[in-house]
Length: 319
Ligand SMILES: [Zn+2]
Image (tube, rainbow, N blue to C red; front, side, top):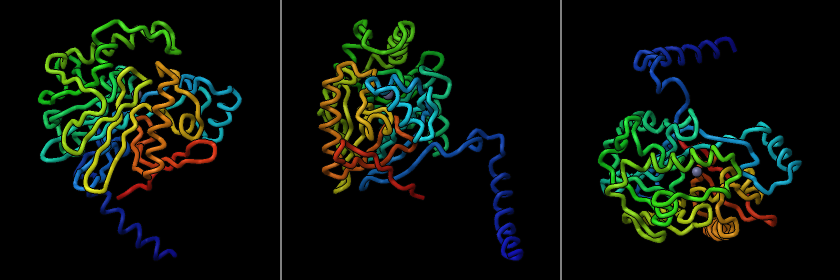
């Protein structure tokens, strides 16, 4: 055993030293774990790029859960009782020579753990100038926050930005009534202001779409309203392969998929529930690969229909 252990140590050590020489330990890319995840949808190259994390009280994301049941679900998932952490899984799609980013991410609009998309782009050898198109599913701050640089410019300077028209009308062109959101009044005010501030640099030239529209060949939007007036889902297709991006139909699978609890930030909870069931039923029936924007990174899995509702089944990590 001693010989085997020595042999293993001998194999690993030089590799580790070589890596350390190639990229100093102080490099940001070496500071944590991978924030990007590559896979393919037919001929289309896809990469989940994490923008980091946000989160809040579990009650916000499971508005109608009985308190004792909510606490038991969190306890059995080994999660804290007072905070549910959500991921920010943006997706880079490369097709026909164009780089399309699905969701811009939060930046710093909803806490200090967002805004990592730029270092994750750099980790795969790209810069914000390389992005041709940005499509957002809805205009909440965690989906549009990165559109603005710290000094007020366009964070993706060459990109055409697509947003759903009904959300633009509700959040950007008007002063939205956010009294339906189960959060303090000051949070609502900051939330509304963060949206207008984030999209300000891209207001000129914004492409407003109706859900159902094709953005580019292979990328279609699907109506998924209720969470917001205009929220869309995305379907990426190539050959027989499909990927469904469910945006904010659910925040975290343990409370909104494995349990049927309603997200508090859903503006019209009945319509959101109908959208969730219609799209989850489609995902389950067609055994679609699904990307959940807020699910644990990289957010890929499938929906299983069960007697009680649905179950989320993450896919295995691919190397
Ligand atoms: Zn969101």
